[in-house]
Amino acid sequence: MDKIKKILKIIATLLAILLVTYLVSAVMSLAVIDPDNPNAGLYILLITQLLIAISTYIIIKIKKKQYGASYIRNKGFLSDSWKMIIIGFGAAGFGNIIIGLLMSLLEDNILVNHSIDIVNAAFDANDILSTIIQTILVVIIAPITEEVLFRGFVFNETNKIFSLKQAIIINGVLFGLYHMNLLQGINTFFLAMVLSIVYYYRRNIYDCIIVHASNNLIAISSVIIPQYLNVIGVILIVSFFIGAYFIYRLVTNNKDNESLY
Image (cartoon, rainbow, N blue to C red):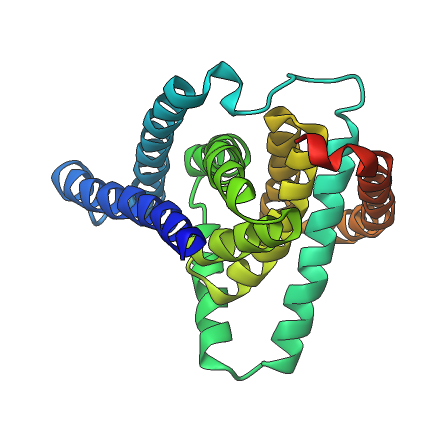
């Protein structure tokens, strides 16, 4: 019962952040953004992400007062942090395989088609400025904010309550639900588990941000430079196998130290 109360508290915190953020974002959008602007949706998304970043900053500030400056594990950029780029590309490759299978198996499903429409709308840039804003949002702002919130806060808290495997799965479920999109939710479920493993064993939020940013870079590159899809596909396939090996080595090399963290 105590575990249930604690996990519900974490979920309630996430819901509160999202509710307040979307309400404030909606009010600001109505007051500032012209609804006829073709980039209105992108600007609203940017405002929303910035508000989530502010909310996350406040939560982490409170947690650091409770647990000290080391609440979020952070070592900065390490000499082997480049491996995180390959892991991120590999995770994107795995996600593309999962989404491809679902799209082929559930071709006429309303939820799947709706999910595709939402993703297409999210990556629909009308000009150079919107493309730049979209890239900054997807590759920089979102990875930093979401990693601090979901690995720095959510995973830290769930790992205090549950076993490592349970905490990783819970993190995946919550991160998937957070995206409120069937296809993206399934993709981010697996991505979150990879990110949780990286955070736990590397003990470095920077590495998680690199993985996440690399994953998102592939997603937006597929839209911005579709003429290079074949090249991107080869990179993803190679990265999947190398990234899987890096994850395997990361876990096996640190298996004896699990009880310390």
